[in-house]
Length: 322
Ligand SMILES: [Zn+2]
Image (cartoon, rainbow, N blue to C red; front, side, top):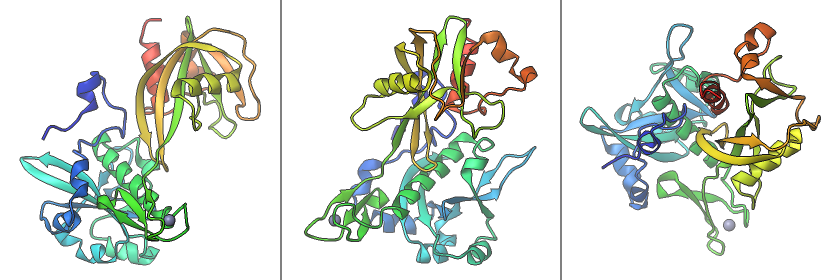
């Protein structure tokens, strides 16, 4: 089966953590007993999550990349026996073999037990801290697993009637166990917009007070219910800077499941130039020219980390010749 690859669609490289090469195989989630089949299959790889952390055989360092620990199902029977939730993530073809990936939540283990039982494979660490170093394909599978099991851990009870919920659809749905209610519940993603606003040879950057000293980035904010993403861009920019924008154009996105965000990257053109920022949320907003950005380091200023949507939008603008 052909696996959808955003690289083929857009000609652009997916953002970091944006594509794990998996066929998510959504129709297969309807099959009864599929989870049991996957658990018995020798080609299945288990992706363990413990209290929102992922398992790594190497956590990486200055000269080495982190290596995630995926455990074969036949070596995971003890973990599978105590796991609280299972999510079939999908499958991919590796050297002619179809590999299924199954995320399991083993948070029931206490800290000492988790260290002892997983010692042969590695140690748990926070993907949010490790993500800039990790291979993007592996990292996106880990991020997907973490996001799904976070959702399970926060949705054990029905938001309609308060009864317990039970997982279904290979871990992609939870159903209320109260027969009178029987509401289905689905994983949610919180959409956030981030925008590069340009005005000829300069861009608008802001900073929040809790960021590292001197760091500036693009303006951003969450989409509100009942709002289009383009409206969210215009509203957030106006609220934070007083600038009115036009020609709002979507560019690319990045999942940021820490715990459940999707970053949607835009560019927009400034219709007005005078900054009038709201000091409550944003500490400072300024226009910076291309030359100023290229010399940020000498002014004790910095840009957001590499591999983020914001940095990619800035780098693309810097190299666009505007
Ligand atoms: Zn209910």
